[in-house]
Length: 164
Image 1: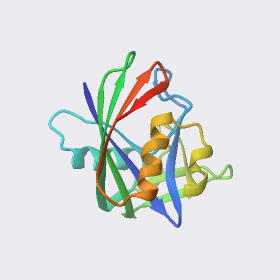
Image 2 (image 1 turned 90 degrees about the horizontal axis):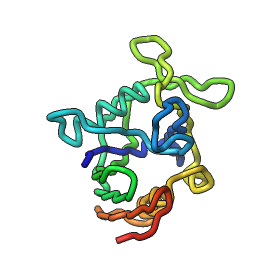
Image 3 (image 1 turned 45 degrees about the horizontal axis):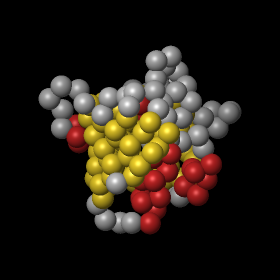
Image 4 (image 1 turned 45 degrees about the vertical axis):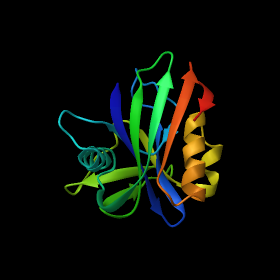
């Protein structure tokens, strides 16, 4: 079983999204996700969140909110508990490139994300991206519901088969 964090960083009605394209062995290759990743040994959810956001974007979250805990169950992937966050308060710089992708600036230097391509996507357009089906479920909850929630998403292969 693995523990992960995922954060949707908001700015002007857009979420910072990561198009997972760079790792060969990536169960999310080709998908668009928020920002996050796996816990390291002895990390709390908040420590994982802050480290992963900085590593992937160069941004330092100044405030964030735990919105939910999602359990992923699959017949081919390891069971996962994901701590879902949102944030709209951060510091740091992202440089807009000619292709509308973003490159983090860390210690005054461009440092491309080693996971894929970063882009600001209008929240109303996110459902048009190549997302996991379960991600659409909790993204919809983020838009509609201000309360903390939990979900259990069950997959057969890459197909969502139940939501609890």
